[in-house]
Length: 241
Image 1 (cartoon, rainbow, N blue to C red):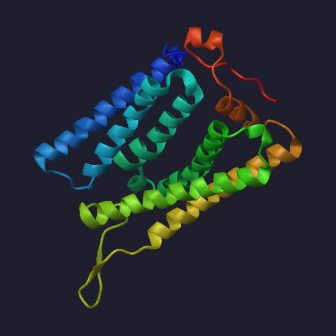
Image 2 (image 1 turned 90 degrees about the vertical axis):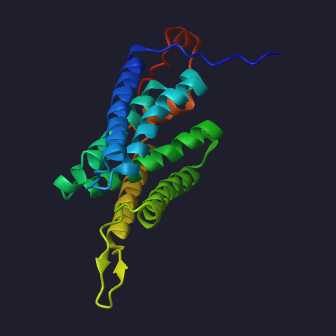
Image 3 (image 1 turned 180 degrees about the vertical axis):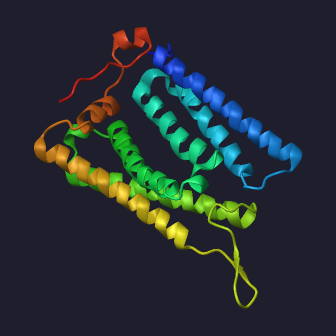
């Protein structure tokens, strides 16, 4: 039997996400091309603008591959967080204008990384049969893995691409140029705090047996689009538990 292809009909909300993503990708790509052509990059945004451009195109690519199997909520949440953390924080330099903004983004990234772990569990396992302890371990590990991968990318960009994502190199008394790792460690600690907040949120959800938004998110992550939703180009909206 031929496998049924996923529906790719697009809901109005998803169209809005796509249009915004295209506009944002166009802006960051223009910034990248300006840097390449002019050679003017005082804030070391060459790789950042290119990476953010690619990340803004991922929702469209995901829709082409998976159709409506990835819900409107996931698409919207991803684009929103990308805008707050990367477009505003990195490209438009909110991290420089507001000293607290960088750590706020890393803290939020810790919570979002744990949500990514929950998404993986819902897609690869029977969520209802999972013990809460396993959910705790997987979501925490995925969150911290995301933090580690991010810091590795920052290190590579600093060491091999001349970027200053980990900070501006400082000259020591013996003439060596080094980068203080304090900012990197504070980023990881902030991510740890966000992951801990998710675990607390999830624990309250399980202890009180109330949705507390986690229930609605789990239903969205775990449920396949219904036939009616496939026709309308949107996944089924779920009520609170």
